Image (tube, rainbow, N blue to C red):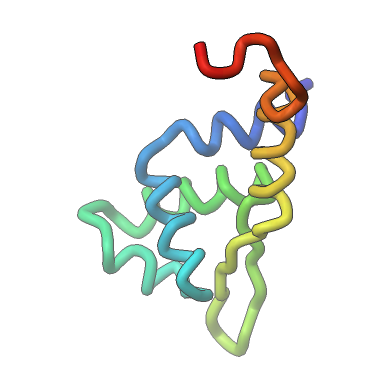
Length: 98
């Protein structure tokens, strides 16, 4: 079973998914709005959104006939904190600056 951190890092490994997150950081968007900014099919964008949802980096909410996606900033912040703790950054590591 994959850990939450592993799922999140795997989701972040793809440049398209990072761009989706960047765009969602500017505001909530529908899948159609997101797809219009990429040179790929709607099913491909949907696949990327599914990966991000499984990693809990995005939330999906039905509003009328649309599904609106938003950034889950809490998980993004927890991921950064986990990586920093893993690397002992900010904990007086003797490796700082090397």
